[in-house]
Length: 88
Image (tube, rainbow, N blue to C red):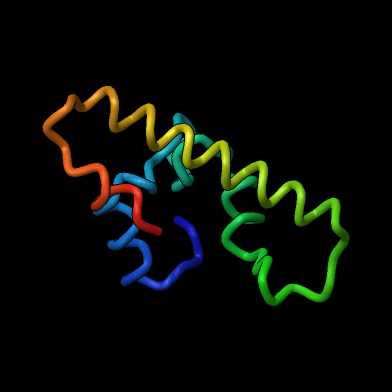
């Protein structure tokens, strides 16, 4: 289980952003467990520590996560409220 606040966990699950991988680890959709941990602990807007390379990794993970969520929504059909699920 990820070391995150329970309210964040509920919010991510309700949006379809958090799932369980084949190993039983909680992950953000489209990411591995290690990528999820990095993403959740990297605070891009306020990060003064770390390289621009880490910021690039963060942005790539964010893009991959959002693409995976969009694909997930497309699989659910046209009647789903996409705005609800894509808010971060």
